[in-house]
Length: 123
Image (cartoon, rainbow, N blue to C red; front, side, top):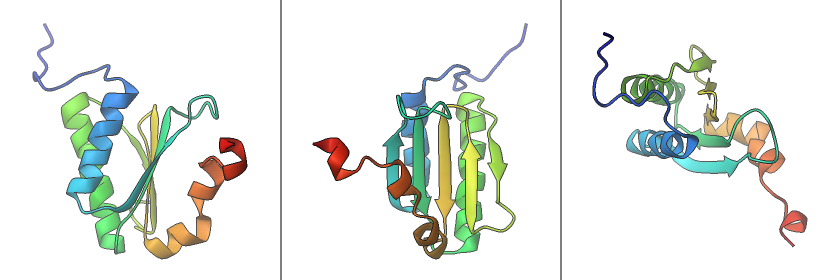
């Protein structure tokens, strides 16, 4: 029989994962944390989360801690890109895509503008 720790939830839904991701980023002093609902807009996932760290070291540390927490608490193995450079780390949990940027890099790419609804869409 395969014994798992009681805290592991192998099939956590995307809202539970989203809450854990937002808490982790907030606990690690992430800045300007934005969540974007992708349902009905894209097949890449249910949500996108974008956050900033003040330095390459903080960006890499936030990504490392987030992936460790998701693995420990939910059994989620995340795919990670960019952690070594620390300018922009992409974390793919399957249902949620997380982008952690240094502020200058985030400003350059402006992902929020691409994915957030425009004022014309809201009317």
